[in-house]
Image (tube, rainbow, N blue to C red):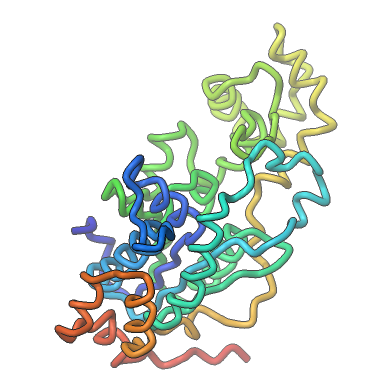
Length: 310
């Protein structure tokens, strides 16, 4: 069971589908799940089960799965080497992602992808909107970049490790609170996104500087007071720091066609799911359908009055 959130209120669950997709893909190691005709299906099977468990355990009536869209983003335009160190998505995973994009709506869940931005930006926009509308927001992910969004009513939950990240959890793990995560990443860099940060400035130095000066802006204003090689490296990198900060900062103002209150869980489509499960040879899921599994339909039977946005 997932750890309990703070006092009960209407919950919005935002699933980092791209993060979960890769984790499900690698979960079975050297024993991938395949169909009799050789198609790899473990990412599909794993994500379906994760989503079913989330619906059952979270008790939410509002949930969406957010995936990265195809193509480059505004960050690539600002910094062409952005994520250039990442390998292309494997063909067998690309096939499974496309299949999931058809299955997830049949489960009764919204799935969102917005060209030109990352899944993180869509999650950030919906999380902030949900927070402003009074939702308690859970972001399902293990992506450290998303910790910058955490506050008293926005938490991160890693369902694979059964852990919840609140403000104190972020501070314990990184040494800085959520509102300094972007400053921390700009200084230290992010190797997974190919953002270099300040040469030879590691996690401890980044935390020490932010603890001493309180923010990246104050650190920059006092860069001349720092001695040693790291101080010299900082001064040499001052022209790049603003770019690094923009690259690691989630855009929470993406123009979307939906609002948090539009993401209510709907009735699943058992006939559609049955066809998919037959094709993919998911016998366990077929048996659950035959036994009358709700696939989240109990959450879809109630609703909350939508707020007036005008």
